[in-house]
Length: 274
Length: 265
Image (cartoon, rainbow over all chains, first blue to last red; front, side, top):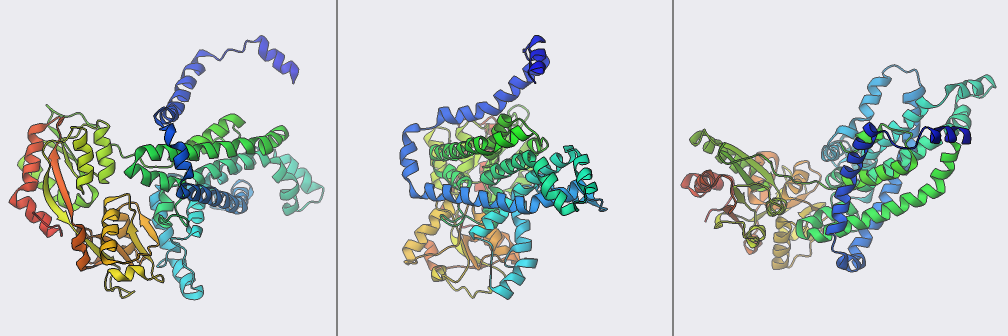
């Protein structure tokens, strides 16, 4: 390891110019708008905004719903990724294309599509309503479902990539030692792709936290039950752009803090394993 | 979409992953409402910013305008009045602004950007229900019924402010299930049958034909919403801008507005 580092150092640590210039442009392009928010933010309003009970409510709802959406995505998305990467079933490529549709679908359309299936008049929703008296739209459950719909493909794509990159010979070895496929999955595959799962989970959580279009369409907007931070930000933008900027910064700060905490707890460990 | 690029890299370095995640969540949040940034002036482009509720009327009047002024390239951008006003204040090159309420026109006028606004139409609230009115809605008082699923506009947008006024005037303690971000999305939910009733503008109900039914109520008179229009002080194409405003204010323009369910002054 240190020999490799030494070799690298002897070749010089400078970034090659053809990489340096576009990388710098990319970084500036991505970071400057954030810097713009920071510069424009009315910092004096921050304490008053944070004390606003509606803000705390929206923030709590955002964190809880995004975490639940990530949990559902992990529970269902990892097996789906395995099927896409490992199974020999026909139509896998079609399935892969279909399950990544939410990545390109405008989220508002996704929200309408959810209505058509899970709404009061939807194919499944009508049955739920008639049989159990359960209606999903305009509830916190609808928020979690909308976020899961939009965010799970990020997890599936990440985990499938990790599975494809993983060395399948370990699994073969486990099989020759008598492990069945379920045991191989739990004891060999899962630890092998853990970093990919964590990375996918973080992406999924981040996307769920920022979800706007499908949520406001399918779950509506009501403080306390369905108004997440992005919805609060959008509506604040209609009345008071400064307040919207402050709210965005609150969301950004909390999410960055969470991700950094996660990094220390989980990513460093799985990073070491990788 | 904004996430697709980052999603294709499963094994990212940790820091870049965190950064990407932060940017994904920051970037996918809201919707920016940019204006069409076309150059204008000598080429004869005319850019009109109009409230979303004017979509059908201005599409129709726009067709008429193009016939009468074949040399002018008319572009109409529809959106929430507040988003449009914000874009104009931010410097969008716009010739005509038609707002769904006086407040947003005041935002533009406050920056010294509006010419002389004229009220060209007015709108009142109406209750939109799915065809057949399955929940048996009869009036504004039904918005206090807990067991119904009800949509109103968020208080931040004009139709929501109007809704608060009529509820206050009628003494109804409304119990909506959702406060929609604009009037068309409230209407959509009634159209899909996902809410029992939505409080929207009369013209919105008219625009959907038989897909929704409208129920008028007397308290609507307490919140009559005026629609002002003006040419902008910095209009790149002032001549065409004035011609468009004249068309909207003309007898023909007023007739199209009335047909669409608007009141005309």
